[in-house]
Structure formats: structure tokens, C-alpha cells
Amino acid sequence: MKSKLLTSTKKNSTRNLLSEEYRVCLLSAKHGLERESVRVDGKSQISTKPHPKALGSSLTHPLIKTDFAEAQIEYATNIHKSIPDALKELTELHAFTAGQLDSEYLWPFSMPPVLPGDNKIEVANYGTSSEGRKKIIYRNGLGHRYGKKMQTISGVHYNISFDTCMLSIVSEKRFKKPLSPATKSQIYFDTIRNFYRISPALLYLFGSSSLTDVTFTEPTKQIQKLDSKTLKAPYATTLRLSGIGYTSKVQGKYPISVNSLEEYAYGMCQVVSKPYATYKQYNGKSTNQLNDHILQLENEYYSLVRPKQVPKGEERVVDALVERGVEYLEIRLLDLDPFSAIGVEENRLYFIHMVLLYCMLNESPKSDLVEMADWRKNQEVTTWFGRKEDIKIKFLGEEMPLRDMIHQLFVEIQPIADLLDENDASGPFSKAWEAQWEKWDDPSHLGSEMSELDLEIHKSSFREFGLTLAKSHKEELLQYPLPPNKIKYYEDLSVQSIYEQQKIETLEGSHLKKNQKPIQIKPLKLCSGT
Image (cartoon, rainbow, N blue to C red):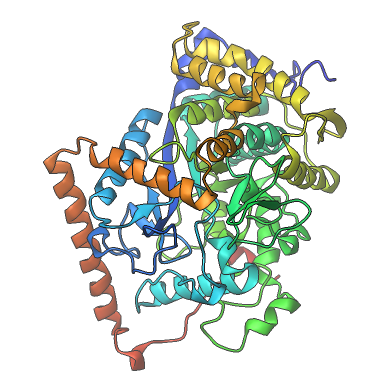
């Protein structure tokens, strides 16, 4: 086994930044959270009701939206300077929602509740405006390409941007030049590659979806009936990110380089511009899909982490990246924590923050197609078999036991926790380290293990246990002390968002079908001439 997972040479001495001198810079970051969850009725069935009017317009509300399905709420917090502040806003959004849901609940698991056939799952409705119809058609395309059931899988996204003081020091040390949009982007892409390398550890530690309802998929050799209503994959960590979850064999044929912004943008340009023969079958109706390309839009690309820049107006995602560089990273591998009323608890976020610092401060060799294929294989192996004792993964070309790799990661990030908490074992980073270490030391603490044990203890099916948790979470959220001024703030946001949607539709005249123009997708500037 390697003495160290990731290394830092004298030439690349950014690991030396792990010192008290740079502690404030290391701690400084901005944080945002997104959480998806399916609304269910009192029988654990996906809701057939429209998005609650009391939650506003899912097109124009800045914080409460919908994801793929009309019944799939998505929260997106503002940007915060601390993890507790981001979690506080997410909790407030959940508490406000709990008061508006009447006889419905938020499903606590990443894997979906009781589902009808694909044709009965309603995609999200965003109204008649050109932007609203574009969103609907895009989702119709996703449903045709990957199946609507897969699209109802939910998770948590953690958005983080490092502070300029940290990025500036890394730029000076690594590239011997002041921070610029180019060096900032390169630091983020270096971080992304290392993140992929250690991602099996995170899939193992945070996977909480080894169970699913029988309405989601058919039993196979890998996933078997636990009872008449429940399927279980015996060694799985996260079915959400397995071959039956958010993965795509088609996308797997077109790996996109994360060696640099230029290579990433070029790869993305290819997949959003090239037609894919199999998808031509959905071209019959103009409402079936936006186009028959490998990806309709950049956001269709499934990955564990995305480089992000905020688009302006109708600007395309990749154009924004090329124009202004990477602004933050979107971490997409977190399953919902079914035992948390808001789907995520702070230990996970502090741990990922440490891991990202570790990935940023260590050397990050360029990856080739062979290593990228190893990352995909590692993901498949860990999601399906991560809890099997003798399972092995590939790390920088070398095969090693997954448990050894995770142990080594703990050893290497412990100094980061000690530094950030100033050797206070009760500090948030040390507590996060300890909470995850317990999962390695005793796998019964893993999310998947705990869910399976609860089913066994309560003699429940997946759908029954999920509803029990959902009801408990709703009760907890209804008790949350949301001040009257906050309730009014969220009520006003909902009313304003409905007004905004109506205003857009009226200005366009799109509420009258005869005025609805065909949807035009703005081409990527980068792709012109390719």
C-alpha cells in the first residue's frame, strides 16, 4: 500500500500551507446547499397533486423550486459564509414547507417512494413562457432517454467556493504567478481530479441507499427481494449512483476531460453538439426533447462534482465558465440522510470541506482516459459492493483494498481537522472526522446498514419505514421555532414569484397558445465552427 495517497513535492509545496499562519484562509469559504425530495401521500405514493401554490412558482421562486417531477421539491439556499448558516436557511425552508403540505410528506430516502408506471409520473410544470416550456421539454427528453423513474431519485448538492486569500496563496506557490481567472480555474480542476480519486471513500461513508421499493425496478442477481414490497442490494452503499441510478452508458462513451477548463469546455461542446442516433426516435413531437444530441444541455451530464459559474441572463452554462472561469464546485455525491429532517447534517459537510482542502493542497497529476475509466469502474464497484470486506479499487493505477484506502485518507486529513479546530477535539471538523471514522471502525454506523437494521427491527417494508420517518420529520419541522417575520418573508417570496411568472407570460402573450413560439436553444459560443 502507498505510504501516502496524494503527495506534494518541493516544487509544488502547497501542502506547507497546512500551518497556523494560513489557518484563517483555509477556514474561509462560501457554502450553499440544494436538497431534492419527493412529496408523498399517506400511502408512500408519489403525490399526484401540483406543486403547492403556497410554495410559489417553481419557475421564478429563488429558493423553492421543483426538480424533474412535479412532485419533486428542490430547495436551493443562498450563499453563506458558514456551514451552520447554510443549514439554518435550509431548515427554515423545510419548516415553512411543512406548514403548507397538509396531508403530504417529504420522502426521506434518495431512492423513490411507491411509483406508478413511467407514463403516470408527471414532469414538472413551469407554465407557458418560453423559459418554462424549455424546462418542460428538457425534462420530457430526460424521461425518454433515461426513464422517468430514475429521474425521481433525489439527493443533496453541496456548493463551495474557496476564499480569494486561499486561492491566491495556492496560485503563488503552485504557478508562481498572481491569482487570475485562469489559475483559479486550474486550481479547481486540480481539486476535481483528486476528488474523483478519493471519491470511493465518500461513496462508502455517505451512501445511504441500498434499499428501494419494488415499483422502482425488477429484481436481478445484484438486487433481490427482501420482502414483497422491498428490494435490497446486499453490499450496496448508494444505489442512487449505481448502474440503476444517476449514471448513463451513453455518457460513459464520451468521457469529458477535467485536466483544464479548456479541455472540459471542448469536451462539453462535443456532447451538446453531436446528434446521437438512438435519440432520433424521440424527434416526432416538438415537446419530446430539446434536440437529439448526446446531451440536450450541459446540465444533463452526470458527474460526482461539477465546476460552476453563475450564468447571466440566457447565457449557456459552459459559456459562463469559459467567459469568467470556475467560481465554485458543486458536490453531487451525497445521498439524502434519511434520519435527518432536512436530508443532511453538518458532520458530512465539514468532512467534505476538509476533503476538498486536502484535494486542493496536494499534487494532482493529469488524468488520461485509462484513469478516467478507473474512476467509473470504482464508482460502479463501490456503489454495488462497497460493503463487501475484500472489495478493491484502483487508485492512480494501483489496485488496493477500499478499506485500506479509506483508512489512509483518515490518517492524511486528521492534521487538517487538528489545525482548523486548533487541536480542540470538540471542534466541528474534529467531530466530523470522528463521526466518519466510526463508520470505518464499525460499519454498522453506515447509512445503508442503519436503514437495513431498522427495517429488520421494526419488521417494516421500505415504503412503511420511509413513511414513518417522513411523518416524524414533518412533526419535528412543525415544532421548529420559525419567527412570524420569517414566515411572512417566505409567504411574500411565494406571492412575488407567482406574480413574476404571470408577468413573464403576459409580456410574452404565451398564455395564448397562438402566441407560443418554437423553443430556440441559444448555441454555445464555444461550439461555433465545430
